[in-house]
Image (tube, rainbow, N blue to C red; front, side, top):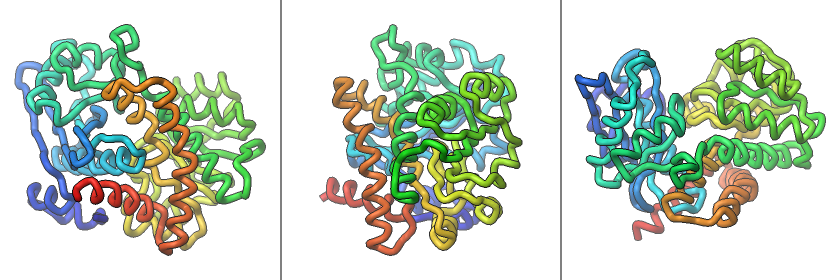
Length: 360
């Protein structure tokens, strides 16, 4: 079911919103002693337990945090479904602007919170969390993935996410330009954190001319020095004359304003929920002739790698799921043409086909 941003913002009743977006659970947690506060959203567990990372962000208010956790957990449902893995969609968001309070005790308390759900939600890394935080969380719950390698896990999922995005980007280039050869192609990467940084490595090795931006100046210099990518301003990124725009920071950067400014032929990146309003902006991209690779497919490499821990898959089995992102991206483009709908809608239909078949 597609939900518009306007409908979300107009909905004041949380239970009504959950029903509209078809969520199963929303847990609010608040620990006075540690200062831990946030939400866990569980969207759909038809295919298996929900899995999604734990995000830390300084949300303006609790309503923004609820909106984020519901939208992100919904996206995780589609991500796992379309990737062919047996997981549902979940997400955790923690409201915090105080790094000092995020002690070992703080993270253990979060682990205890996850454990109260009895395995219906499996947590992992996301914005603001790493294998260090996971090492604390796993002391209080078994329902965790992305564990440190020294603890028997597969480590940081970011490289796997970046590789999947790279494959989806190459498939998008093939659709747009008739070849997936990226040599000489100009690519604008917005956000060069864990995933974006690894993506830049893949792109430069493939011969692309890469432009990068980020609010973290230290990261910018580090990645630019290592890759030779050209640094541009955070707002300038939308006006560059490039072949591909790759949003790898937070969501909603593809909106009415930016679509009017973008000069690219392809949008393919790692950020979740890139379309500010999937019912409006997918059509705008379609009308403008910009090919959009649905984010929840091409950024699925991380959750696929976490699935490896959940199901004890081999490295080769895991790699097959991630390698298939290339072909699935092309399948989505074909389905979108056949149904005469935006690629985001085509991707959701494919994901829901699998979920509905499992329900039957």
